[in-house]
Length: 443
Image (cartoon, rainbow, N blue to C red):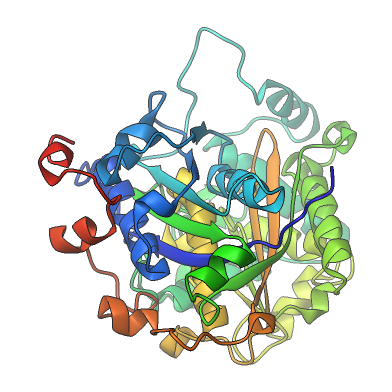
Protein backbone atom coordinates (compact mmCIF):
# COMPACT_ATOMS: atom_id res chain seq x y z
CA UNK A 1 0.00 0.00 0.00
CA UNK A 2 1.47 3.33 -1.07
CA UNK A 3 1.34 6.36 1.22
CA UNK A 4 -1.28 8.92 0.22
CA UNK A 5 -0.61 12.08 2.24
CA UNK A 6 2.21 14.45 3.08
CA UNK A 7 2.95 14.88 6.77
CA UNK A 8 3.68 18.14 8.56
CA UNK A 9 4.90 19.04 12.02
CA UNK A 10 2.59 21.78 13.30
CA UNK A 11 3.43 21.83 17.01
CA UNK A 12 6.38 20.98 19.25
CA UNK A 13 7.06 21.36 22.94
CA UNK A 14 9.43 20.10 25.60
CA UNK A 15 10.45 20.44 29.22
CA UNK A 16 13.87 21.44 30.40
CA UNK A 17 16.01 18.33 30.76
CA UNK A 18 17.20 17.89 34.34
CA UNK A 19 19.30 15.58 36.48
CA UNK A 20 17.32 12.54 37.75
CA UNK A 21 16.81 13.72 41.32
CA UNK A 22 13.15 12.74 41.77
CA UNK A 23 12.04 16.35 41.32
CA UNK A 24 9.31 15.66 38.74
CA UNK A 25 7.22 12.62 37.87
CA UNK A 26 6.40 11.50 34.34
CA UNK A 27 2.70 12.59 34.30
CA UNK A 28 3.77 16.12 35.19
CA UNK A 29 6.56 16.31 32.61
CA UNK A 30 4.46 14.65 29.90
CA UNK A 31 1.53 16.97 30.50
CA UNK A 32 3.79 20.03 30.17
CA UNK A 33 5.37 18.90 26.91
CA UNK A 34 2.04 17.87 25.37
CA UNK A 35 0.33 21.10 26.40
CA UNK A 36 3.19 23.16 24.95
CA UNK A 37 2.95 21.31 21.63
CA UNK A 38 -0.81 21.86 21.52
CA UNK A 39 -0.35 25.55 22.31
CA UNK A 40 2.22 25.77 19.54
CA UNK A 41 -0.24 24.20 17.11
CA UNK A 42 -3.09 26.37 18.40
CA UNK A 43 -5.41 23.40 18.90
CA UNK A 44 -7.07 21.57 21.75
CA UNK A 45 -6.42 17.93 22.60
CA UNK A 46 -9.73 16.73 21.12
CA UNK A 47 -8.32 17.48 17.65
CA UNK A 48 -5.73 14.72 18.16
CA UNK A 49 -7.01 11.47 16.67
CA UNK A 50 -4.21 9.10 17.73
CA UNK A 51 -1.18 9.21 20.02
CA UNK A 52 2.04 7.22 20.33
CA UNK A 53 3.80 7.60 23.68
CA UNK A 54 7.39 6.52 24.23
CA UNK A 55 9.25 5.63 27.43
CA UNK A 56 11.65 2.91 28.55
CA UNK A 57 11.36 2.99 32.32
CA UNK A 58 7.76 2.62 33.44
CA UNK A 59 4.84 0.28 33.72
CA UNK A 60 2.39 -0.36 30.91
CA UNK A 61 -0.06 2.40 29.91
CA UNK A 62 1.96 5.32 31.28
CA UNK A 63 0.88 7.07 28.09
CA UNK A 64 -2.78 6.85 29.03
CA UNK A 65 -2.07 7.99 32.59
CA UNK A 66 -0.35 11.09 31.21
CA UNK A 67 -2.69 12.05 28.38
CA UNK A 68 -5.91 11.48 30.33
CA UNK A 69 -4.99 14.74 32.09
CA UNK A 70 -5.78 16.54 28.84
CA UNK A 71 -8.99 14.69 28.06
CA UNK A 72 -10.53 11.26 27.76
CA UNK A 73 -12.04 11.11 24.29
CA UNK A 74 -11.15 7.46 23.70
CA UNK A 75 -8.55 7.82 20.96
CA UNK A 76 -5.98 5.06 20.37
CA UNK A 77 -2.92 5.56 22.60
CA UNK A 78 0.01 3.29 21.76
CA UNK A 79 2.85 2.84 24.25
CA UNK A 80 6.32 2.43 22.70
CA UNK A 81 9.65 1.12 24.03
CA UNK A 82 12.58 0.91 21.59
CA UNK A 83 15.63 1.71 23.70
CA UNK A 84 17.30 5.07 22.98
CA UNK A 85 15.32 5.53 19.74
CA UNK A 86 11.98 5.28 21.58
CA UNK A 87 10.92 8.89 20.97
CA UNK A 88 11.62 8.71 17.24
CA UNK A 89 9.83 5.36 17.05
CA UNK A 90 6.73 7.05 18.50
CA UNK A 91 7.17 9.76 15.86
CA UNK A 92 7.47 7.09 13.17
CA UNK A 93 4.14 5.54 14.19
CA UNK A 94 2.40 8.91 14.46
CA UNK A 95 3.66 9.84 10.99
CA UNK A 96 2.49 6.59 9.41
CA UNK A 97 -1.06 7.12 10.64
CA UNK A 98 -1.26 10.38 8.68
CA UNK A 99 0.78 9.26 5.69
CA UNK A 100 -1.55 6.32 5.09
CA UNK A 101 -4.75 8.29 5.65
CA UNK A 102 -5.72 6.77 9.00
CA UNK A 103 -5.78 10.18 10.75
CA UNK A 104 -5.36 13.89 10.04
CA UNK A 105 -3.80 14.88 13.36
CA UNK A 106 -1.63 12.73 15.61
CA UNK A 107 0.65 13.20 18.60
CA UNK A 108 4.01 11.67 19.47
CA UNK A 109 4.89 12.13 23.14
CA UNK A 110 7.97 10.88 24.96
CA UNK A 111 9.17 11.11 28.54
CA UNK A 112 11.56 9.47 30.94
CA UNK A 113 12.05 9.47 34.70
CA UNK A 114 15.45 7.89 35.15
CA UNK A 115 17.79 6.74 37.88
CA UNK A 116 21.15 8.40 38.45
CA UNK A 117 24.21 6.59 37.09
CA UNK A 118 24.92 4.36 34.13
CA UNK A 119 22.17 2.33 32.49
CA UNK A 120 21.81 -1.31 33.44
CA UNK A 121 19.50 -4.26 32.89
CA UNK A 122 16.25 -4.28 34.88
CA UNK A 123 15.50 -7.99 34.57
CA UNK A 124 17.88 -10.73 35.66
CA UNK A 125 15.53 -13.70 35.19
CA UNK A 126 15.31 -13.63 31.37
CA UNK A 127 17.44 -13.23 28.26
CA UNK A 128 18.98 -9.79 27.83
CA UNK A 129 18.13 -8.51 24.32
CA UNK A 130 21.75 -7.38 23.92
CA UNK A 131 23.22 -10.78 24.85
CA UNK A 132 24.55 -11.39 21.31
CA UNK A 133 26.10 -7.93 21.23
CA UNK A 134 27.83 -8.62 24.54
CA UNK A 135 29.13 -11.93 23.20
CA UNK A 136 30.46 -10.31 20.02
CA UNK A 137 32.18 -7.54 21.96
CA UNK A 138 33.75 -10.11 24.26
CA UNK A 139 35.09 -12.07 21.29
CA UNK A 140 36.42 -9.03 19.41
CA UNK A 141 37.64 -6.49 21.96
CA UNK A 142 36.99 -8.18 25.28
CA UNK A 143 34.89 -6.97 28.19
CA UNK A 144 36.64 -4.32 30.25
CA UNK A 145 35.84 -2.11 33.19
CA UNK A 146 33.29 0.66 32.75
CA UNK A 147 29.66 0.99 31.67
CA UNK A 148 28.58 -1.41 28.93
CA UNK A 149 27.30 1.30 26.57
CA UNK A 150 30.53 3.26 26.93
CA UNK A 151 32.46 0.13 25.95
CA UNK A 152 30.30 -0.49 22.86
CA UNK A 153 30.64 3.04 21.51
CA UNK A 154 34.17 3.57 22.83
CA UNK A 155 35.35 0.48 20.98
CA UNK A 156 33.66 1.76 17.82
CA UNK A 157 35.63 4.99 18.14
CA UNK A 158 38.87 3.07 18.73
CA UNK A 159 38.28 0.99 15.61
CA UNK A 160 37.52 4.08 13.54
CA UNK A 161 40.82 5.59 14.66
CA UNK A 162 42.71 2.40 13.84
CA UNK A 163 41.19 2.06 10.37
CA UNK A 164 41.08 5.65 9.18
CA UNK A 165 43.61 7.71 11.10
CA UNK A 166 41.29 9.63 13.39
CA UNK A 167 42.55 10.30 16.93
CA UNK A 168 41.04 10.54 20.44
CA UNK A 169 41.43 14.30 20.11
CA UNK A 170 38.87 14.31 17.31
CA UNK A 171 36.33 12.75 19.69
CA UNK A 172 37.22 15.26 22.39
CA UNK A 173 36.68 18.10 19.90
CA UNK A 174 33.17 16.80 19.23
CA UNK A 175 32.35 16.97 22.94
CA UNK A 176 33.89 20.45 23.26
CA UNK A 177 31.70 21.61 20.36
CA UNK A 178 28.49 20.19 21.79
CA UNK A 179 29.06 21.63 25.25
CA UNK A 180 29.73 24.99 23.62
CA UNK A 181 26.50 24.76 21.60
CA UNK A 182 24.43 23.83 24.66
CA UNK A 183 25.32 27.09 26.42
CA UNK A 184 22.77 28.76 24.13
CA UNK A 185 19.99 26.22 24.74
CA UNK A 186 17.75 26.93 27.77
CA UNK A 187 16.43 23.34 27.71
CA UNK A 188 19.86 21.78 28.20
CA UNK A 189 20.69 19.88 31.36
CA UNK A 190 24.21 21.32 31.25
CA UNK A 191 25.14 24.73 29.86
CA UNK A 192 28.80 24.97 30.84
CA UNK A 193 31.52 25.59 28.26
CA UNK A 194 34.72 23.54 28.51
CA UNK A 195 38.06 23.87 26.80
CA UNK A 196 39.41 20.97 24.76
CA UNK A 197 41.97 20.37 27.49
CA UNK A 198 39.25 20.18 30.15
CA UNK A 199 37.34 17.65 28.04
CA UNK A 200 40.41 15.50 27.54
CA UNK A 201 41.48 15.65 31.19
CA UNK A 202 38.07 14.93 32.75
CA UNK A 203 37.68 11.54 34.44
CA UNK A 204 38.23 8.53 32.18
CA UNK A 205 35.16 6.37 31.58
CA UNK A 206 36.40 3.88 29.00
CA UNK A 207 39.25 3.92 26.46
CA UNK A 208 39.46 7.38 24.90
CA UNK A 209 36.12 8.47 26.36
CA UNK A 210 36.13 10.86 29.29
CA UNK A 211 33.19 11.91 31.43
CA UNK A 212 32.61 15.07 29.37
CA UNK A 213 32.31 12.92 26.23
CA UNK A 214 29.43 10.85 27.63
CA UNK A 215 25.75 11.78 27.85
CA UNK A 216 24.15 11.91 31.30
CA UNK A 217 20.98 10.22 32.47
CA UNK A 218 18.14 12.73 32.52
CA UNK A 219 14.51 13.40 33.34
CA UNK A 220 12.43 15.18 30.73
CA UNK A 221 9.71 15.10 28.12
CA UNK A 222 9.08 16.27 24.55
CA UNK A 223 6.09 16.21 22.22
CA UNK A 224 5.34 16.65 18.51
CA UNK A 225 1.97 17.27 16.79
CA UNK A 226 1.69 16.00 13.20
CA UNK A 227 -0.97 16.87 10.64
CA UNK A 228 -2.10 16.26 7.09
CA UNK A 229 -2.17 19.04 4.50
CA UNK A 230 -5.94 19.19 4.86
CA UNK A 231 -5.64 19.78 8.61
CA UNK A 232 -2.91 22.38 8.12
CA UNK A 233 -5.07 24.42 5.74
CA UNK A 234 -8.25 24.06 7.79
CA UNK A 235 -6.47 25.40 10.88
CA UNK A 236 -4.40 28.08 9.09
CA UNK A 237 -1.06 26.56 10.11
CA UNK A 238 0.77 26.99 6.83
CA UNK A 239 3.25 29.56 8.15
CA UNK A 240 4.55 27.34 10.96
CA UNK A 241 4.24 23.93 9.30
CA UNK A 242 7.42 21.94 8.71
CA UNK A 243 7.23 19.06 6.25
CA UNK A 244 8.58 15.62 7.12
CA UNK A 245 10.08 15.11 3.69
CA UNK A 246 11.19 11.53 4.38
CA UNK A 247 11.67 9.15 7.27
CA UNK A 248 13.09 5.65 7.54
CA UNK A 249 13.50 3.15 10.32
CA UNK A 250 15.96 0.26 10.15
CA UNK A 251 17.17 -2.59 12.32
CA UNK A 252 20.46 -4.49 12.38
CA UNK A 253 21.91 -6.30 9.39
CA UNK A 254 24.10 -9.44 9.53
CA UNK A 255 27.07 -7.05 9.71
CA UNK A 256 26.36 -6.98 13.43
CA UNK A 257 28.29 -10.26 13.56
CA UNK A 258 31.26 -9.46 11.33
CA UNK A 259 33.63 -8.76 14.25
CA UNK A 260 33.54 -4.99 13.78
CA UNK A 261 33.04 -2.69 16.76
CA UNK A 262 31.70 -0.03 14.41
CA UNK A 263 28.96 -2.41 13.29
CA UNK A 264 28.17 -3.41 16.88
CA UNK A 265 27.36 0.25 17.50
CA UNK A 266 24.66 0.18 14.80
CA UNK A 267 26.46 1.82 11.89
CA UNK A 268 24.81 -0.32 9.21
CA UNK A 269 21.32 0.49 10.52
CA UNK A 270 22.16 4.15 10.08
CA UNK A 271 23.56 3.60 6.57
CA UNK A 272 20.38 1.81 5.50
CA UNK A 273 17.97 4.34 6.99
CA UNK A 274 19.93 7.36 5.72
CA UNK A 275 20.20 5.96 2.19
CA UNK A 276 16.44 5.36 2.10
CA UNK A 277 15.69 8.86 3.35
CA UNK A 278 17.88 10.61 0.78
CA UNK A 279 16.53 8.41 -2.01
CA UNK A 280 12.93 9.19 -1.04
CA UNK A 281 13.69 12.91 -0.75
CA UNK A 282 15.67 13.12 -3.97
CA UNK A 283 18.48 15.13 -2.37
CA UNK A 284 22.05 14.49 -1.24
CA UNK A 285 23.42 14.57 2.32
CA UNK A 286 25.43 17.64 1.33
CA UNK A 287 22.14 19.53 0.75
CA UNK A 288 21.50 19.49 4.52
CA UNK A 289 22.43 22.49 6.69
CA UNK A 290 21.64 21.32 10.24
CA UNK A 291 21.75 17.90 11.92
CA UNK A 292 20.58 16.62 15.29
CA UNK A 293 22.65 13.45 15.68
CA UNK A 294 22.60 10.78 18.39
CA UNK A 295 25.83 11.62 20.24
CA UNK A 296 25.28 9.42 23.29
CA UNK A 297 29.10 9.32 23.27
CA UNK A 298 31.42 11.48 21.20
CA UNK A 299 32.62 8.31 19.45
CA UNK A 300 29.14 7.72 18.07
CA UNK A 301 29.00 11.17 16.53
CA UNK A 302 32.35 10.45 14.86
CA UNK A 303 31.25 7.19 13.24
CA UNK A 304 27.82 8.55 12.34
CA UNK A 305 29.09 11.39 10.11
CA UNK A 306 30.33 8.60 7.87
CA UNK A 307 27.22 6.41 8.12
CA UNK A 308 24.86 9.30 7.31
CA UNK A 309 26.88 10.18 4.22
CA UNK A 310 27.94 13.61 5.50
CA UNK A 311 31.46 12.73 4.39
CA UNK A 312 33.20 10.07 2.33
CA UNK A 313 33.78 6.75 4.12
CA UNK A 314 36.64 7.05 6.58
CA UNK A 315 36.83 10.85 6.45
CA UNK A 316 34.74 11.84 9.46
CA UNK A 317 37.71 13.31 11.29
CA UNK A 318 38.42 15.61 8.34
CA UNK A 319 35.07 17.34 8.93
CA UNK A 320 36.27 18.11 12.44
CA UNK A 321 39.68 19.33 11.26
CA UNK A 322 38.05 21.78 8.84
CA UNK A 323 35.41 22.94 11.36
CA UNK A 324 32.65 21.69 9.08
CA UNK A 325 30.38 20.48 11.90
CA UNK A 326 29.77 23.79 13.67
CA UNK A 327 28.75 27.34 12.87
CA UNK A 328 30.54 28.71 9.84
CA UNK A 329 31.15 25.24 8.40
CA UNK A 330 29.41 22.90 5.96
CA UNK A 331 26.95 21.61 8.58
CA UNK A 332 25.94 22.57 12.10
CA UNK A 333 25.71 19.31 14.03
CA UNK A 334 23.83 19.31 17.35
CA UNK A 335 23.11 23.03 17.76
CA UNK A 336 21.01 21.99 20.77
CA UNK A 337 24.09 20.65 22.55
CA UNK A 338 23.23 17.08 21.65
CA UNK A 339 22.76 14.25 24.10
CA UNK A 340 26.20 14.89 25.61
CA UNK A 341 25.18 18.24 27.05
CA UNK A 342 21.43 18.68 26.53
CA UNK A 343 20.79 15.33 28.25
CA UNK A 344 19.28 12.00 27.29
CA UNK A 345 15.90 11.03 28.80
CA UNK A 346 15.49 8.03 26.52
CA UNK A 347 11.82 8.34 25.58
CA UNK A 348 12.05 12.08 24.98
CA UNK A 349 15.34 12.36 23.07
CA UNK A 350 14.09 11.79 19.53
CA UNK A 351 11.21 14.21 19.98
CA UNK A 352 13.50 16.85 21.49
CA UNK A 353 15.71 16.49 18.41
CA UNK A 354 12.66 17.06 16.21
CA UNK A 355 11.65 20.11 18.28
CA UNK A 356 15.08 21.70 17.82
CA UNK A 357 15.04 21.14 14.06
CA UNK A 358 11.52 22.55 13.73
CA UNK A 359 12.57 25.69 15.61
CA UNK A 360 15.66 25.96 13.40
CA UNK A 361 13.62 25.70 10.19
CA UNK A 362 11.19 28.33 11.50
CA UNK A 363 14.14 30.63 12.23
CA UNK A 364 13.28 31.01 15.90
CA UNK A 365 16.56 30.03 17.58
CA UNK A 366 18.15 33.39 18.27
CA UNK A 367 21.87 33.13 18.97
CA UNK A 368 22.00 29.45 18.10
CA UNK A 369 20.16 29.88 14.79
CA UNK A 370 21.71 28.08 11.83
CA UNK A 371 21.70 30.52 8.88
CA UNK A 372 19.98 29.77 5.56
CA UNK A 373 18.36 26.66 6.93
CA UNK A 374 16.49 24.71 4.23
CA UNK A 375 16.91 21.02 5.12
CA UNK A 376 17.31 19.51 8.60
CA UNK A 377 18.36 15.92 9.32
CA UNK A 378 17.64 13.87 12.45
CA UNK A 379 19.35 10.67 13.61
CA UNK A 380 18.26 8.64 16.66
CA UNK A 381 19.68 5.17 17.41
CA UNK A 382 18.95 2.49 19.97
CA UNK A 383 21.14 -0.54 20.53
CA UNK A 384 19.29 -3.73 20.12
CA UNK A 385 18.58 -2.41 17.41
CA UNK A 386 16.58 0.40 15.94
CA UNK A 387 17.53 3.61 14.18
CA UNK A 388 15.25 6.31 12.84
CA UNK A 389 16.48 8.92 10.36
CA UNK A 390 14.18 11.82 9.45
CA UNK A 391 14.47 14.73 7.02
CA UNK A 392 12.56 18.01 7.39
CA UNK A 393 12.09 21.23 5.43
CA UNK A 394 10.02 24.38 5.83
CA UNK A 395 6.67 23.91 4.08
CA UNK A 396 6.96 26.94 1.80
CA UNK A 397 4.90 25.22 -0.90
CA UNK A 398 1.79 25.61 1.27
CA UNK A 399 1.91 29.39 1.02
CA UNK A 400 0.85 31.73 3.81
CA UNK A 401 -2.34 31.85 5.79
CA UNK A 402 -4.21 35.16 5.95
CA UNK A 403 -5.40 34.26 9.46
CA UNK A 404 -2.01 33.19 10.82
CA UNK A 405 -0.90 34.52 14.19
CA UNK A 406 2.76 33.90 15.06
CA UNK A 407 2.93 31.23 17.74
CA UNK A 408 5.36 33.30 19.77
CA UNK A 409 2.80 36.10 20.03
CA UNK A 410 -0.04 33.70 20.69
CA UNK A 411 1.64 31.91 23.60
CA UNK A 412 3.50 34.96 24.87
CA UNK A 413 7.04 33.65 24.65
CA UNK A 414 9.54 32.17 22.21
CA UNK A 415 9.76 28.47 23.09
CA UNK A 416 13.04 28.06 21.20
CA UNK A 417 14.90 30.46 23.49
CA UNK A 418 12.82 30.35 26.69
CA UNK A 419 12.26 27.22 28.75
CA UNK A 420 9.46 27.75 31.22
CA UNK A 421 6.73 25.72 32.87
CA UNK A 422 3.10 26.35 31.98
CA UNK A 423 0.43 27.82 34.19
CA UNK A 424 -2.70 25.82 34.98
CA UNK A 425 -4.65 28.29 32.84
CA UNK A 426 -2.46 27.52 29.84
CA UNK A 427 -2.90 23.78 30.33
CA UNK A 428 -6.65 24.27 30.71
CA UNK A 429 -6.77 26.14 27.40
CA UNK A 430 -5.64 23.07 25.43
CA UNK A 431 -7.66 20.41 27.20
CA UNK A 432 -10.19 18.55 25.09
CA UNK A 433 -13.38 20.51 24.63
CA UNK A 434 -16.02 19.22 26.97
CA UNK A 435 -13.48 17.86 29.44
CA UNK A 436 -14.77 18.71 32.89
CA UNK A 437 -12.26 20.69 34.94
CA UNK A 438 -13.66 19.10 38.08
CA UNK A 439 -13.16 15.63 36.64
CA UNK A 440 -9.74 16.45 35.21
CA UNK A 441 -8.66 17.61 38.65
CA UNK A 442 -8.85 13.98 39.76
CA UNK A 443 -5.93 13.28 37.44
